[in-house]
Length: 187
Image (cartoon, rainbow, N blue to C red; front, side):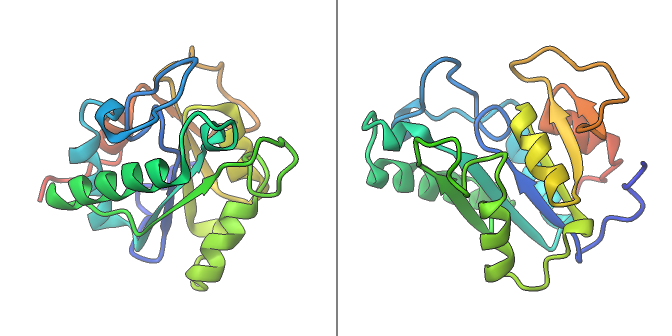
């Protein structure tokens, strides 16, 4: 499905964090701002996406807090600094939702849909049929499909899946790669 012509300010963009916005620390966690590094091109991509989408929200599983590897204040500091840096570069993140639970069955832990319903409580105008979920885990894709979203899989740390795939509508090497496919003109 080609959605690029359909996207307008009534659409909402859901983004995973690690491996989408910032470099993923495979096998470990980003525990403080000093360890956080934006993916190549992600700041520019977010600036361009901010022109297209009415809302941009981050939905991220952050089990490191639940495991005691980092504190909730550390996570809040990372997200505050991330949002400020994105804003300084002309982009925006409207809200970050993070699930810190250890239990895979927690309603907020992707692929469960609690963070999506929280977003709609905060932004009642969200129509999940007018949403895109971008992530680099199959759980992100399942989360998106459970809510009826268009899904974009990024192969930042995993091999590409063979398409067509029940959970993946589009697949790109990076957030920047997807933005280029949308033919977004620089502002």
